[in-house]
Length: 119
Image 1 (spheres, helix red, strand yellow):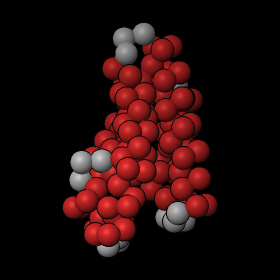
Image 2: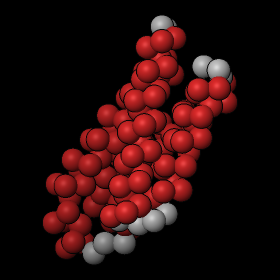
Image 3: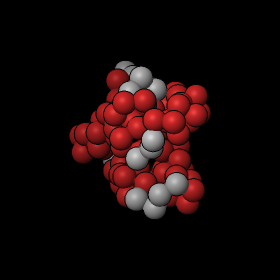
Image 4: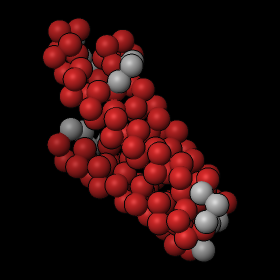
């Protein structure tokens, strides 16, 4: 896999680790502020956001495997799977939550998918 693809995948991985933390352990503090929620609304949403945070963690794991697995074919397919899931989740988030999610999540994932396929 090209070094540019690995760097972009690494950045996307770190972003999803941040999402995991923001939606789980930091949700009632920093997460509440980032999402612009009152304390009452955050309390109600916390279980669902924690679940969502777990999914972001799973995406980070897939991307991590793509970066560190010693077998190139396995790494390639984990990259395709992880980045594809990130891109689709970003489209869904843009349609249902906030259009900016498309640029935060989908665009980098699609660029990384292109880079992964170039080599």
